[in-house]
Amino acid sequence: MISLSLCALLCGVMVYLAFSSWRRRKRSGREGLLQVPSRVLLGVRSIIFMVCGVALLAACFVPFLVFFAACLAGTAVVGLCCVPAMRHRRSTDFGVSVLVSVAAFGAAILQPLGLKVMLLPTAANLPYQPISSRVLKTYDAGLAFEGIAAGSDGTLYLTGNRNLNFNVSDYYRKASGVLIARAPSGSERVLFQTPIGTTAGMIAVDADGTIFMTSHGEVSGVWKIGRREAPKMISRLPGGAWPNGIAFGPDGQLYSADSSLAAIWKIDPSSGHAAQVIADKALAARPFIALAPGANGIQFKGRQMIVTVSDSAEALSYELNSAGHFGRAKVLAKGVPGDDFAINSDGSIFVTTHPYDTLVRIDERGKRTLVGDNRQHIVGATAAAFGRGTFDRATLYVVTDGGAFTKGPEARGQLVALYPQGQ
Image (cartoon, rainbow, N blue to C red):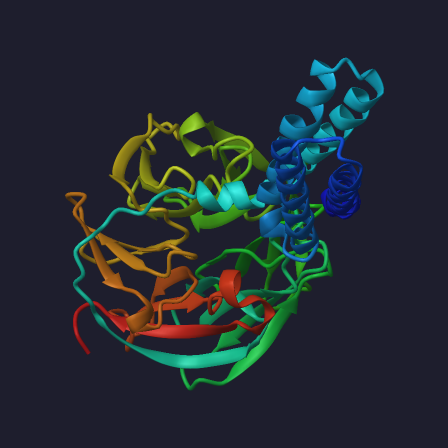
């Protein structure tokens, strides 16, 4: 990775500058060439460069630190090398110091992860009204769940991924995804595994049990996993697309929220033909500084299409008219950096907030309530779905990644059942 290579190179430069300043300080003291204030300044300069070197060394192992360490080093070089060299008209020293500072700020631009984490959208401070919950299963370390959907026979379908690396833009490069079917009895079987470098995303289940799953990678699109046919990617979206949430509309067509292109795709479940039906800046993530996705979860409540936009922390709705066109976006709620969500029979929606470790209820009037957090085992909650069987229609199922952003590969995804109407 270029930014880490620059960090390693800059670390050596900073250490060299630190020792160079220290040697100059000692030599000048022996020769009596500099007064005490100048010697003190050289000592301070040496310490600053050494601190920069240590910070850059740490950044080589912790990408979160790259932005801050590189900015610190670049500022130090500008203030302690570029400006003095320009003032004393030392063209060679000035040119070298400019190159070093450019390299430092370049490393910061190439790896802005730390800045992105600092500028994540702020979640609103909401009243806490917890609902009862229980963990149905804790899975193996490294399995980060992404999606969940329920079949009419009571089967739960779960998608998860291994080997995701969110420190790089192509976080899916070494990833592999899995689609799991969990029977009402609790027994599980793997229905499908994605090729290496391709993620398992969100899922929608047709009335006949056919599963449609979004996937992101070098080639992004929608997979179709039928009961009597081999899984295949029926829709391949153009480069730069990131299909995330997926749901059936009232017209029987599939709709997918694009987290990268600020768009909604309409996909024919039979042919796989995809067309962009909405392109809206309201669905976009902020350029450069965004760590959270743009448009994310998507579900229909009648003819109303609801979309969560993670980076703007908003829930939007679009009305589908009888001619098959969507109206302008309406804001249902703000201050909720949502991932996926599920719609209750009373019209309220339950939104997972992934790294914020919360579950938020938004009623039809837009009132927001915190109904779950780590006390309800909501740690890295990525998706939610109500059961569709005769026995669990009031049960809200939530899948988590177990806190993968903080625990890394040791995080253990969970399946959690919650009971909004009481158990």
